[in-house]
Image 1 (tube, helix red, strand yellow):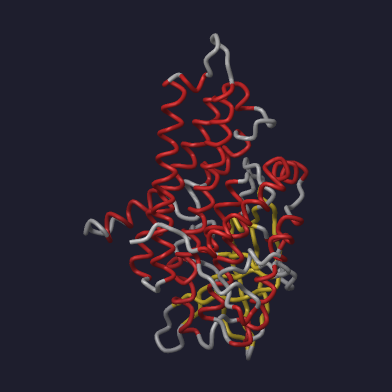
Image 2 (cartoon, rainbow, N blue to C red):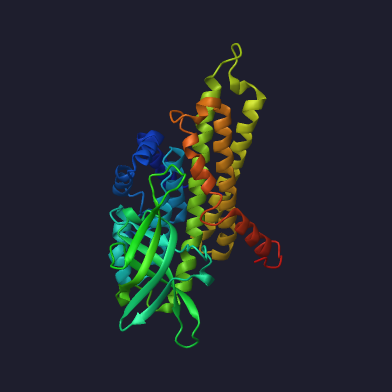
Amino acid sequence: MNFDLTPEQDQLRDAVRALGRRYGHSYFVAKAKSGEHTTQLWSEAGRLGYLGVNIPTEYGGGGGGITELALVCEELAAAGCPLLLLVVSPAIAATVINKHGTDEQRKRHLPGLADGTQKIVFAITEPEAGSNFHRLGTVARRDGDDWLLSGRKCYISGVDEAQYVLVVARTEDAASGKLKPALFIVPTDAPGLTRSKLDMEILSPENQFLLYLDDVRLPADALVGESLDAGLPALFAGLNPERITVAAMGAGTGRYAIERASEYTATRKVWGGRSIGSHQGVAHPLAHAAVQVELARLMIHKAATLYDAGRDLEAGISGNMAKYAAGEAAALAVDTAVQALGGAGMTTEYGVATLLGAVRAGRIAPVSREMILNFVAQHVLGQDKSY
């Protein structure tokens, strides 16, 4: 059992931390409030190789794994720049295409994903079905050699920034007549694909959208993989990296909030000559939040290590636990930081209340805390399925 990063991972962490701090939370907030995107930070991270650390070297990536990508997610968030599209494009889309795409799909998409010049977002959630792929209403049907996709998707991140969207649909099995999942790489400018921006109470440079697919015509090679049999394993291939990197982003955000609050409480003096941090009523909640964040980081490291070792079942359990732990810890850390700063905590200047919406959403998406508890009860505790 080894809790130390390799020298290369240490160097990656330090380099990403330095990049994130050059931009900082004020950059993130300014872009979000102006309705702009963090294009400059994304482009520089891509140019330096940080966006493609989990992509094979033959496609221009770093040849690492989800452990390395989680480090990137965490350190940028710890600098006050939690980039949601790191989860969507390098973690989900690149993993799915690398593991289950055709040779042509890998050659076409992975180099751009590695250097940041291409973004592929992910569309599974629907208004009626949520993310339950057994009940998805988006259907793909054959029309000659082409596919026609029809349906609706919701809460799809970053469609306005991406060239493609990885759509999860259902296809009819010719032998059984039953519907089975399949993934399609859909250009965001495809005829029949329209979008509507959702107004969200979250301060973020990444926007959320409703997607409408009205007989979107796609060539045969838009289907991920060589056949429909690739659909289910391709879908599951993206879920563990998603949970692990979301958790890493949450842990980084928690670290950022605790650091900001600790700096403030160590120097703020209002009752004589002692800092407010010298009082247990202020220090203990921050210390408690720091413990929770560190525990979450340990589970993230375990989950990423298991995933990169190919131990998918164990990584699924640990990944869900990591996502749960980090979601709770990040929300606790930001809320505790706001409380410790008092009125200053609610200002934009001090940069902690600006994260309240994002960390609250982290307890819901991409899978809710309640569904994770259902998963743990069933797969760890041996309880009957509750849903």
